[in-house]
Image (cartoon, rainbow, N blue to C red; front, side, top):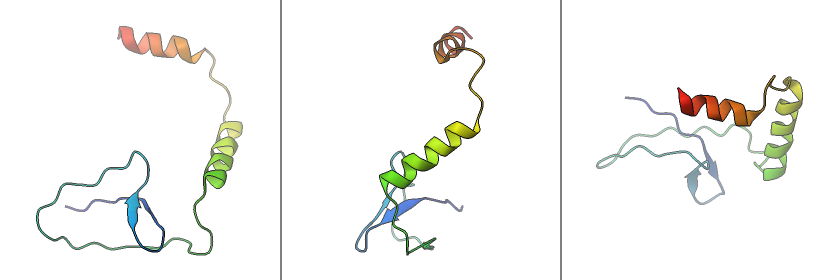
Length: 75
C-alpha cells in the first residue's frame, strides 16, 4: 500500500502538516521524500494569501453557512 503524506521539513525534522496523519507502521518502512521548492519556505503568510485568493475566486454561497450546517444535521 502507498500513502502520500504532506509535511514540513525544517532542516532537522519532518513533521506532517496540521491535520495530517501518519500511518501506523511496525518496524521499518521505505519512504520517499520530495522537496517541492527549497527556495521558498512555507509560511503562514503565504498560506493565508493563497486561501484569500481562493476565497475571492469563488462566488459566495446562495444561503448562509448556518443554514447549511442545520440542513446537514437534519439529514
